[in-house]
Structure formats: C-alpha cells, structure tokens
Length: 145
Image 1 (cartoon, rainbow, N blue to C red):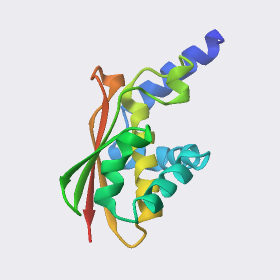
Image 2 (image 1 turned 30 degrees about the vertical axis):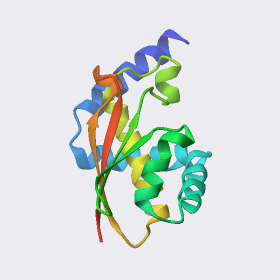
Image 3 (image 1 turned 135 degrees about the vertical axis):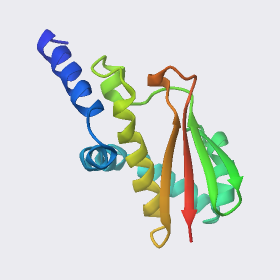
Image 4 (image 1 turned 60 degrees about the vertical axis):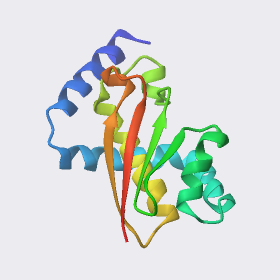
C-alpha cells in the first residue's frame, strides 16, 4: 500500500467523522448498495426465500447459514444482526481503521432489508462495531409496518 493512499484514507476518515449523520448517509448509501450487490444481497434474498419469507425464521436461520448471527428482539418488528469480524475490504486491506466506515455497513443492511421487504419502513441502528473496539458489529433492525 502506498504512503499516499495510507495518508489519503486517514484524511478521508477525519473528514467523514466531521460530517452530520445525513451527510454520512448520502455518501455511504451508494457505497453500501454497490458493495452488497456484489453477492451478499443475493445470498440474503436466498436465505429469506428459504425461510419461507418469514422474517422471524430468516433471523433465526442466519447463524446456521454462516454469515452473521440473527436475533429476534420483538417478533415481526425488531431484530438484530451481529458479525464477529469486519468484512469491509477497505479495513481488511489496511486503509480504514475508524468506525466511520461502518455507516457503509448500516446502508448495506438498509438496502438488503428494503430489497426483501420493499413495502416496509425500515430503520437500522448501529449498536457496536469492531472498528470502535467492540468484540462484534451489531445492528438493530426496526420494522414499521
């Protein structure tokens, strides 16, 4: 990795951290959507079909499907997803080490959930992240039907 790219991403992180939430959402929505369109979105759609299009079952099955863990907080309304490792390629390659990039993950989850439940208002809350020093990344999914 070049010194310039290492420095550039440090500047990028610093700039992102200074933005308000709305600006972060605008920047990372495109990133999040395109990242999951590379395969993860199709995998989650398949998991949803295999669960009989039942969200409670979908979240229960996530753990056995091997891509994150799912939890039912309130059946039909509130769920959580957790990941034991960071799957961000920018982090894996050493470019980004701040949880400012985790807005991309939040946007990815929004995209996936809207693709499987298009007529549902969805809110995603970032609870913990590995890049902020937690042992896992955890997101809460609130559905307003």
